[in-house]
Length: 114
Image 1 (cartoon, rainbow, N blue to C red):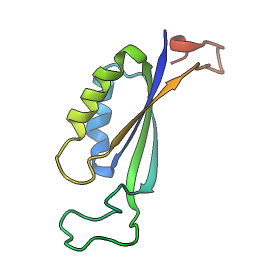
Image 2: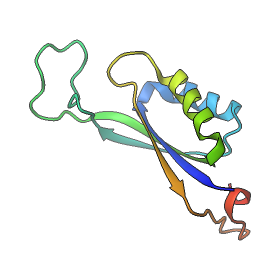
Image 3: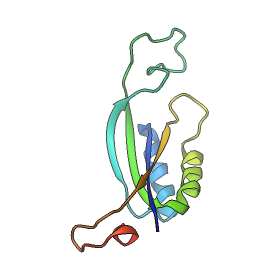
Image 4: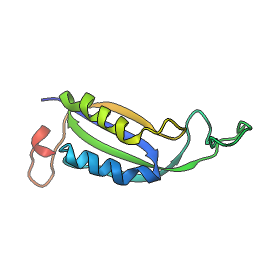
């Protein structure tokens, strides 16, 4: 069975709802980091009229999960529903192929290691 890593970068306020939705969907674990960043808008707030010429790094959260590849579309739809507001800063989702996962304590590999 193949595995994929889904990495979500979104605003700080979205985490609680996203965590609850992923837990309810059966996601077995996650890694969360507080990061700084901006997208193509260079950190421009939606209410600002002038375009920023220098990037403004805003506080974000980066959430990483690993799931079975056949569940990726389902999980992405769930994430999109949870994060969508239609405004700047809703976030980005990145998907990577994972060749293997090893649980150090038991030596389990693949899905068994999740």
